[in-house]
Image: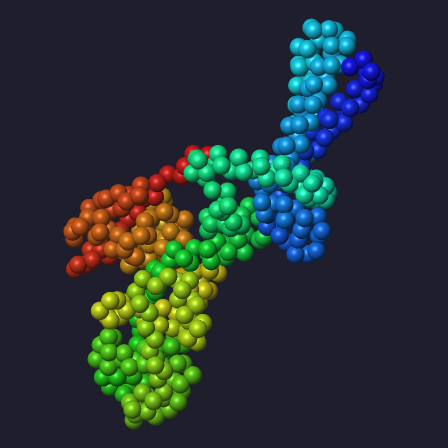
Length: 423
């Protein structure tokens, strides 16, 4: 090209490299944008964010345009560099031009702009969106043909671009986001948010008060015994039954207790029954997140958990669910201390009636929680028979030795946790 000055060719080559750099940076910046922050900024009225959000609704079109311009610029730059090299070094300059141009494009049109875009995606993507939008309309016919062919290849591989997954996070992904936000979310709040995410994995029988620990009023008892129990009770709500717990007739609220015990020795059981609220039953296996919604919908704070035969298995309160989120705040803080006694050799002497979930949460253990709810049940399930004193077994790397048995259950066990993992 003898009619084109060498200076003009160098200027044109520089322009092509700049165009390639802008395309590379825009592509990386757009794909590196935080979609949730982008949605927030768009809702706040940021014009650049709104334009970028529109472009990312169909990333195949945006990427098709960017790659069309970028590849055209790179190929044209290669041709111009070859012409310049021929002017200076003849045919030997072709190899020189290929090597030098590859290095220049790699540094100035790929690595540097893409690194900048990855570090500052908003500063690059939002201004670029103002340019990309009009260009997409201008070159839409070409981009449409390119996308048609490219999407055809993807469909042949079993991928349908129009069915791309939307803006959503799984529970585990959201947990990771919460845990990585330590700089802006206090640790206590992180624990609460993660506990909320775990509610879907926990059922009512995981946190309920088991049947044998339910405190209630038996209408078949003598009036003085009922009055004494009402006076000494520290619970807000008491189930009232006749004969056995499965014959529940209602729930007595604490605010009704003074009115009931005012009759003293001459307790009128019929009058007591008039103060009772209708019992509320919860099917066994109900998830905590669903039961929390049920409590709110039915304006309830306590329910009795029943199995498929209608037999009562336990008692659940709203406080039990809240404790799963915020931690224990209504129970006796010394309860676990009475159930677990650490030894100097690193083992723990544990009351076998202790909840496996409570042991895991308080001692940071990883005993299995998918089956039995108590340590006694966990041991019996593993052995499939009633163990004798001194029997030892291993569950999930925890060595468990039977210390004391009583009748058909284990009373006390010694647990040796696995050594901590090496850093």
